[in-house]
Length: 182
Image (cartoon, rainbow, N blue to C red; front, side, top):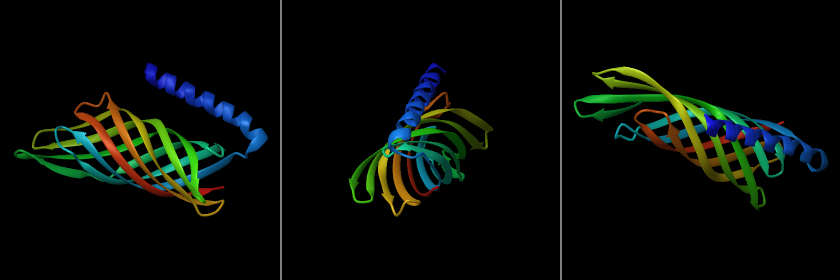
């Protein structure tokens, strides 16, 4: 809990300083995005691969900084384990902080860090069903392409380290999406 408090306090402080900076040099720009998400998780000695989607609600506080809230849902994945099978799916939501660095005309490199709550639905056949929930600490990077002042697209790769999720260790996530800036 101490880690979450420190991260959220840092995010709020950074956002607050961004508001004062935007008054002088940049306009606040809200945006909404939708992503296709593929993830490969290390869980129970197997590697479930999930396909899913995510929606994002974000805001740019400057030319090189933004924060966003996300919600993601995966489809179910099935893996054979010995005489049985393991079916998993997840729902996640959280907060990400992004930093941009322009590379070429219309292209920017991006780095991201954040935290999310992950809720996994796990079904062991023939044994039992249960749900696990815990935190995922998200770190990644990618590319962003700006079509015009309203439409942008991006590719992001993330490493997610889970905390307090029994049987789930970490995940690697790849997302491709579009966003509309108001």
